[in-house]
Image (tube, rainbow, N blue to C red; front, side, top):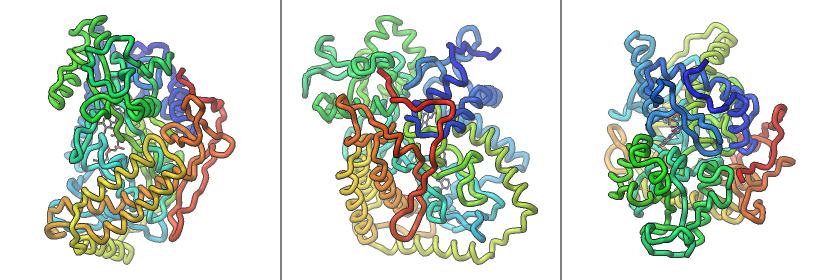
Amino acid sequence: MKNYKNDGDSVHRMFYDTLKGGDFRAREANVFRLAECSASLIDQAVAQGVPFAREYSGYLSNRSFGGVQVSRTFYARGQTGQQLLLGTYQALMRQVKAKKITTYTRHEMLDLVLINGVAKGIIARNLDTGKITRHTANAVVLATGGFGKIYYLSTLAMGCNGSAIWRAHKKGAWMACPSWTQIHPTCLPQSGAYQSKLTLMSESLRNDGRIWVPLTRNDNRKPEDIPEEERDYYLERKYPSYGNLAPRDIASRAAKERIDAGHGVGPLKNAVYLDFKDALANQGKATIAKKYGNLFDMYQKITGINAYNEPMKISPAAHFSMGGLWVDYELSTNIPGLFAIGEANFSDHGANRLGANSLLQACVDGYYILPQTLPHYLAQSGNPEAINKEDPAFIECEQQVTKQLEELGKINGSKTVDYFHRELGKILYDKCGLSRNEKGLIIAIEAIRNLKASFYNDLKIPSKINGINEELEKAGRVVDYLEIGELMCIDALSREESCGAHFRTEFQTNDGEAIRNDEEFKFISCWKKSDNVPLLIKEMLNFEFTKPTERSYK
Ligand SMILES: Cc1cc2nc3c(=O)[nH]c(=O)nc-3n(C[C@H](O)[C@H](O)[C@H](O)COP(=O)(O)OP(=O)(O)OC[C@H]3O[C@@H](n4cnc5c(N)ncnc54)[C@H](O)[C@@H]3O)c2cc1C
């Protein structure tokens, strides 16, 4: 029926994989809807011109990603996101030409405007002129992505940030499970202290690459000089049924565990090997090049190493936020008129997202769910009154935003924004990253508060605030990251269990597996802003069609 092989897959199987992958910390109904819409989405994307990979027969091709035992993922040669973006962008520009959409590029939303508790617009800053602008709306949709860049070093684009959702949170929108952040296992390792970004190597490489470290600690031999019996294929050893395709949280934690135990490789001993030797021997260079040639080229361009001849070196890096603004089944936040879609909301991934499910969720939210629920909201809210840009709510909000920018510009200290961001990233990676514990989280909260105080005393922003000023833009984002980081630690501290990417070292089995506590923590943590400590509201999770079990990939 469909134009791909299927590989024994089904909506139910995908639903179950996704729910289990998220360690039973997502809403069943949302996850089922995601799986149900997935097949239609591929048709939609193909119709938009997305060049998904095809087999010789003309069928669309699939490959497998972590946490899954069937080939389910449609792909465009390790550039799936970019190609989907181009497809969407072309469709968008068609509507712009038809004068149905007006775009405001190079504008950053700085605050949400509420009138009588209902979202009625935003305040933005023109990044080229510094001009602050008011935008009225009958409903506001935030599609502003994730905040994984809070760790400073991450796979995210430099412009990604958490400010839009955080400013909405400060206006009353609940933040859900902010500490559930994904650290991706297959990235290029950090190579020095002054790097600003890390590069993702597609997870698809784990279909054929084998991950290993030397059995001996601090082994300085070249990989080709280390015989088979002196290698530890630790994922295959620990998780024989999923092997190198263990889910991301598990694969990343296992890598960190080996690196911390002294088995890391590379100049900084912060990496593990991803080895294609067997795949090259079994399938031949031409086949491997066909599958992953662009990724091998990219690897060589960045590292100077030819991965056909020696293994790649990879390392975990911050990548995705499972947490975000709380939304209901209709993708509405708790503020009437404010919706959040894509990575900006907490939605369907539970405590750990499976590979390829993010683009799926962002597209399903935007193409299928919101077009139904937003008109419903508008219809229910009656005949919309004209919203006036001169309303006191807009004026006051604009004044506050302007005041904050002016105050940041006046600090005139001695340290750059990046300095504070980097320090925050180190605290979070160390204490609220791949693993966490009570003692570390308490230390982190204190350290972040101190860093925040120092930021407001010692920040230096060169140049004027009313013009292009990237340092000012970054400073506004770091103000928010400092606050988000604190809430992440509070969230992680409050959840006394291990689930998915949230691994509390106090709650683990003797062989290092997560211990979930369904009795006490089968809920989504929704944090409400308050003057003193944030208030926790629990959305209980009910499992009607599945039975939460111990998540095993062995
Ligand atoms: C390197 C990399 C590879 C990935 N590969 C895959 C993959 O193969 N499959 C998969 O499923 N997922 C993948 N992901 C994850 C996926 O790309 C993201 O989760 C997804 O793009 C999120 O979509 P989004 O539309 O919600 O947000 P984004 O794509 O992040 O878009 C948000 C946009 O909002 C803008 N923005 C942010 N704040 C503001 C503001 N205040 N005002 C105005 N604009 C703002 C941002 O600049 C950005 O343009 C990958 C991610 C990375 C980083």
